[in-house]
Image 1: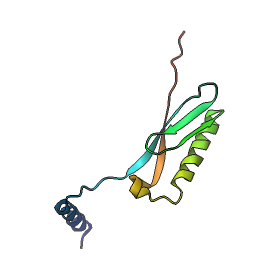
Image 2: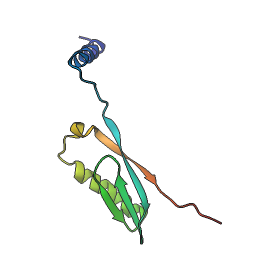
Image 3: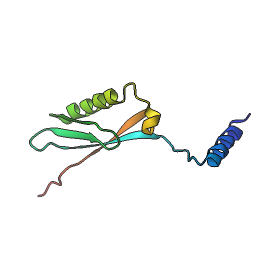
Length: 98
């Protein structure tokens, strides 16, 4: 059977059963912001991961490690994530006033 026919068959079956096929996320979003006293704090949006570091290099390394440990041996699909998600990091900065 052709791939297109298989996909249409699956879509029809899920529609008949009342299910909606949900696309899996390929990214995990995180925000890095300055810490309250020093350093930086990184926090993920979709998963419960928060870490910190004295420098940007340290906080990004800690974020990668914390996310890897959090996802280790998890069923990513049940979390709405694709098999190999990437981190999409946004940094929060105060504007520099002259």
